[in-house]
Image (cartoon, rainbow, N blue to C red; front, top):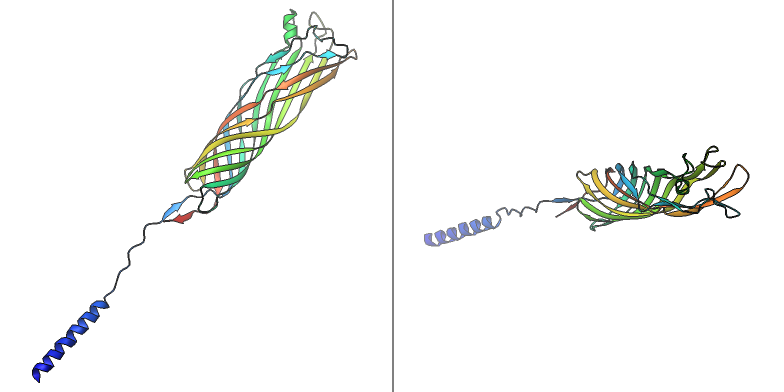
Length: 270
């Protein structure tokens, strides 16, 4: 009887020990660390500086009256290069990058200063050997311009590669002037002029890098399609009407800038 009691007691103790072992706490595996994925969605503003240069020469014909008489006695065209320009201005825009993708779309507006220009003595006057400054051709693309463009970009985390294109508004001015009435430099006064805003297209591409969640640096190329030919008419002091044709070149621009982005999600990924 005593032996039976001892055997049963040993079995009971073993059962309790096994059950306690089964009930011991189990610790879950720690999750992998969370990595934050940058997202470009949001509104932004910024500023930029850079340079601009024409893609060719300005071109003007000699003014002719209705009878075909050239103002300076010749019909040579006046072709001349324009100066390079500093550009500077500001931008405002919005990006949308869907969660889980690298592509984004956006819209951006920019406005700034530009002055690609030159004033030159008319070539016919030079060839005629006049002793005094005679008629002048003057071209100016600027002093201001604006662009409204769409953007399509590919984001590699904080690096963004994008293309943009849209409509451009560029101030332009052209003039032909001969105000000399004495000596060998002319027989009267003639002024032809054109000024206004050229509405055209612009296209370019750039790269932008976000060095914080809100601030980013960019480098961008943008072409302004300011190439345009138009006719200018003016009346000579004696009453004759003179007309000439003028062509403006297009303009290449390159800039560096800084943008500040207002908020936007930073999405967690594992």
